[in-house]
Structure formats: C-alpha cells, structure tokens
Length: 139
Image (tube, rainbow, N blue to C red; front, side):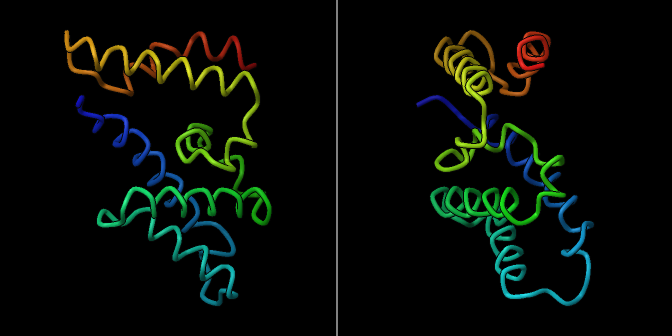
C-alpha cells in the first residue's frame, strides 16, 4: 500500500491555518460562547487532535464546514477550497463542477505518482504543478 502521508500532511496544514484564523475571529476570539459555538470549537479541536480516528475527523470536518457555510459566512473567504474536497460528503455540495473535476484530476495524478514509485510522491508538488491550469480554468 503506497504511503499517503503527504496527502494527509497537506490537508492538515490547511486545517491548522483555518483553525488559527477561526481562533482570532469573532465570535471565537472572545470569552462568552453560546452552546453552538462551544460545540463548534470542540469539533475544531477534534479535527486537530492527532489521536482522533480518521472517520471522526472526517465527520467533524464535514459538520464544521457546513456550520461555517450556514452560520459563520464571514469565515468563508478564509476556508481553503481543498478542504471541501478533503472532507467530502455534504461538503461536496459547496464545490462547483469545475472544482470537483480539478480535484479529481489532482487525486488521479497523485495516485498515479504514488503507484509509479519512481520518486517520492509529494502531494503539494502535484498541487503546485496543477496551479497554473487551475487558475485559468476556475477563474
């Protein structure tokens, strides 16, 4: 089985950047949080916890992104689009067809590189190699 660490590390980095932003943004940077906000912070911690199962993290991530879309739209511009693909499930509804196609091609290229074993497969390098094409297709 090929090593998928690079893929996980790339997305974990995006999650950490998002968490940093959330923790400095209202209402999460203040002291008094309502019940939903407390649950939101708990789910964020669950996603970041290294000992959570992958399934728990995926469910928490889907819930968190859905909450951002529905309740914290001021955070939306800071959500890295690849996280919607990464968490999948209901999050896929927030991606356009072109974005879905783009992420599918990225995954295919990465898995092809993993299976070739000619060189170390680093997901971020695959993303960067697709970036010029993505900008012209998505904008």
